[in-house]
Amino acid sequence: MAEEKRKHCSALAISLILFLACAFTVLRSFAAEKSGSHLRFEISFPRSVSTAALTGRMMLAVARTDTIEPRLQVGRYGVQIFGVDFEQLRPGSTVTIDGATLGYPVEHLGELPPGEYFVQAILNKYTEFKRADGHILWMHMDQWEGQDWRRSPGNIVSEITKLIVRPGQEETVKLEVTKVLPPIKVPEDTKWVKRIKIQSDILTEFWGHPIYLGATILLPRGYEDHPNVYYPTVYDEGHFSLRPPFRFRPNSEFYKEWTSEDMPRFIVVTLQHPSPYFDDSYAVNSANNGPYGDAIHEELIPEIEKRFRCISQAYARVLTGVSTGGWESFALQVFYPDFYGGTWSVSPDPLDFRNVEGINIYKDRNAFYKQHEWFSIPTMNTRSPRTGEVLLTSQQRNRMELVNGTKGRSGEQLDIWSALFGPVGDDGYFKPLFNKSSGEIDSSVAQYWMEHFDLCYYLQTHWKEVGPKLVGKLHVICGRMDDFSLNFGVYFVEDFLESTRDPYYAGSFTYGARGGHGWQPYNSAQLLRIMAEHITENAPPGTDTSRWKY
Image (cartoon, rainbow, N blue to C red; front, side, top):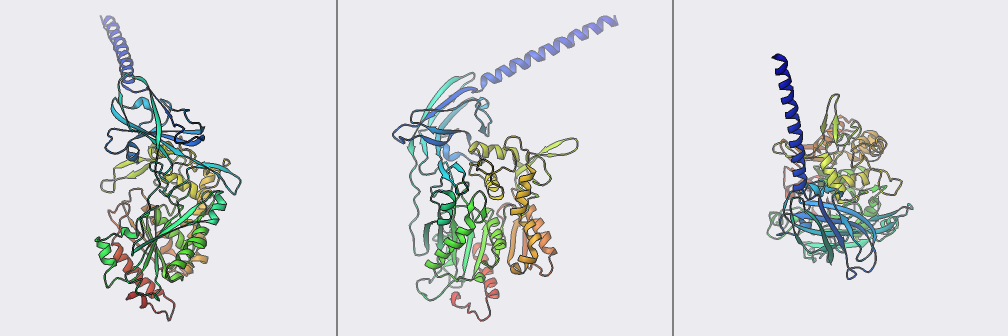
């Protein structure tokens, strides 16, 4: 009897296993049928938009609504996109996007859920650069839009097409990009706000193609009425923008402060210096971006000081900026200690590479995972300052960039850091810190980053030289719950600077206990008053600082 029961149980177990296996096969087949795995897009451009062959990257945006054009819904937390490189594509020839094409956030077309969508193709046009170092690169040439393929003048977009994705669907969708995006409209000058744009000889020589620099200048109250007064200058660093500094606009709170009787008088400048890699060059010399530091300090700022009545002395040139601008303002003060008189850097990009948005480039072997003895954990890229919840992993963030552009041409944050901090690769594009697909870190590139742009390491190894020139000039502001964990790099720099002697750095670090990215303890007008006091205290003996305080 026991033997019969055993055989019966075994038969039942085998039957259950076979049933589960069949059920799994059916479910997997059903899931495949529900997907759009057999969708295919063929995208072309007509002779009416270009008779010449084009090189670039074809993007496809897939959105659930067309109230805003799909291309304008693309972003870190935006709609679905796919991208494919193409070379010398002739009018009428097609670029194919299918199930093998990498996408973000959904990885492949086959994973696109059934439903109604609106699709739009965007041709991101590349330009040939014959660089002075002998390399030939194909990159997107900024058209004064801030390195944004979604709206760059000259890029070509299709009409919006409705698409119904059905289970088991087999369909080839033909799209044609026919609309050339128009030039950017630069705002007109006003009494308060002026703009300049120049071609940089230094950068044009490096890139083998015309490269432009610009500036937006905010003038103080009474500038025209006091023709003999020269003013201290605030350089407000940050991402490309044609807006006035400090978001100056009529009837805003800052406008009321700026035009009030008791506001110290400044000239405030934001700079435009997009590179073929990003909307902002980071304002320093680098192997891949080129000599932007030289161009800004030898061409652009002298032109600003020639056209406007800026006090052209270090004590009267001060810096600030948030995020990218936070790093720039800090780096410029450190690398050009005799040119600037102080910085107030907010939420700066990594000042120390032991934490680059979650990645320790010196100890981690992989940029996507923290490897422990028995297990690995995904590396966090972005978190919620309110809850600490992980919003994006490093792997997700990097796939988003890879879909936007190969060879570092995404125009996104991690790619510009590799272009800025890293060496030139054998193919002329930057040599990446890590593989965008596998996450494997190249330790030789990490060493290059450290020796050239780890600002904490630079201060540690150059303090005897630069320390005396930086006393009282370094002020950093940061939230302790920075969205991208940038506060940890700030901690490392603070630890070193607080340990300095002969001289002691005599600056400041200010933290918001639950502050996220961009947290600040005061508004722009309050910051300007702090700067005015600092400039007054550090002016050369005998300087009359009352003239610009009318």
